[in-house]
Amino acid sequence: MTILYGRPDDPAEFDRYYREVHIPIARGMRGLSRWTLTWTDTQNGGFAGPVHLVVDLWAESKEAMDAVLASEAGRAASADVPNFATGGVTFLEGTEEEVPTA
Image 1 (tube, one colour):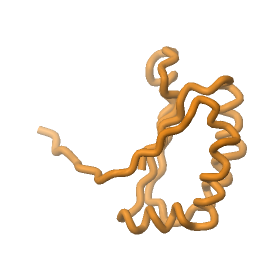
Image 2 (tube, helix red, strand yellow):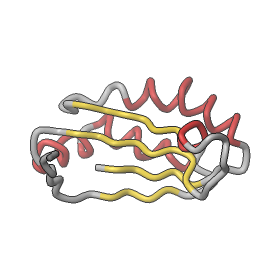
Image 3 (cartoon, rainbow, N blue to C red):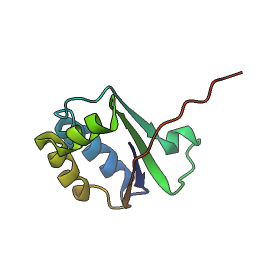
């Protein structure tokens, strides 16, 4: 699952809340095999594009991800999103395909 957080009204407050409040809530989600954050302003040399943060969550299968999201911790993390995502949020779920390198 990929989560795209749009540019928030107050990026510094978004970052603080995400790190200090949301991550501790979301850490309760059991069954994730990987979790990464990409802060796009850092990646793009300070350019303030439309997406502020890209979050990638991995689980062993779609069923495992569905169970993570349906868990009490998953529901709590989802319920917390409106508390800080003033720039909007998009959840993308799909099938990952790895492309071999040459």
